[in-house]
Image (cartoon, rainbow, N blue to C red):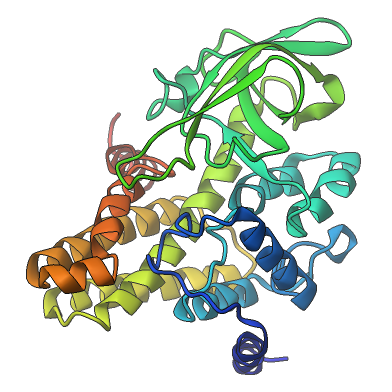
Amino acid sequence: MNEDEYRLKIREWIKQNAPPYRLKILFDTAEIENYEELRNWQRKLYEGGYIGITWPKEYGGQGLDPIYEIIAYEEFIRAGLPYGRSLGSIGLMVAGPAILKHGTEEQKKKYLPRILSADDIWCQGFSEPHAGSDLANIKTRAEDKGDYYLVTGQKIWSSYAHLANFMLLLARTGEDKYKGLTMFIVNMKQEGIKVSPINQITGKSEFNIVYLNEVKIPKENVVGKVNEGWNVAMTVLNHERFFLGVTMLFVSKILLDKINVRELKDEVEGLEGFYRRLLVKLRKGEDVDVEGAILKLVSSEILQKIYEVAVTEYDLEQIMEENWYLGMLASRGRTIAGGTSEILRNLIGEKLLKLPK
């Protein structure tokens, strides 16, 4: 099936299977309060063959070219339906890619199919109160106790941790800043874990603080090699930034159909041209590296501008009716999630432009 046929197939599937709701805030799916509804929607996508499009068939995926996953993102976002950024997003965008590239065969068979079907919900244990932008400076420590690791520390901004079965956790196992980190799979339902929701400016609380107090992690739950967790984290972040950028780019296009701002349309068209260049790399089987950071950086700042223009130019009744004000509030966090704009500019300068630190 060629790309055009695949796109038409998705559009027809959406006509036949779309739920009655559409997103009020086009980028933020958290306003759908019924989480079971989101879980059922992901299962329906999975059964239809539209989740795990690039994942190998032996782990529940479709085994297709990455371009087909991008087409799915475009079409579901255009239809105003949750895709990628929903209840199962951490499993799909963070834990799944990490396990696929660095996990053992046993881990892949055990966790990947249940991520796709939304039977398991995952959260991410990366950032800490004093190690957000400087992720490698984390203090959460995992002590080798022979048959298991004992983990104590604190994580923050963990989306859906209050609902999650598992966490992908980055913890310190050595003293070297980058070569002393290890990635773990943590069962969130065991003793020693406390989850505290964070009240956000939007009134939502999908982010959480997670406290870990002498939590036991069996050694078979190490993802990749001990003290090589930074490499696993980079796999996760590159993948996450790219798909965050894709989502925000196409949401920006939809929003600009509602407001006519020539300058912003020019910016979006320019970014879309850059995005199309990345698709050429994907078609060749190449990985997206620092370009994912560029896409995420620019798209998040454009999205923020669009909401700011909307709430400035629209009358109050329209702003309230269409929830533009909530979109504006939520958009502030989009320049933080997946790496702040400042950190991404440093990354681009050092890795792409070869500037000094």
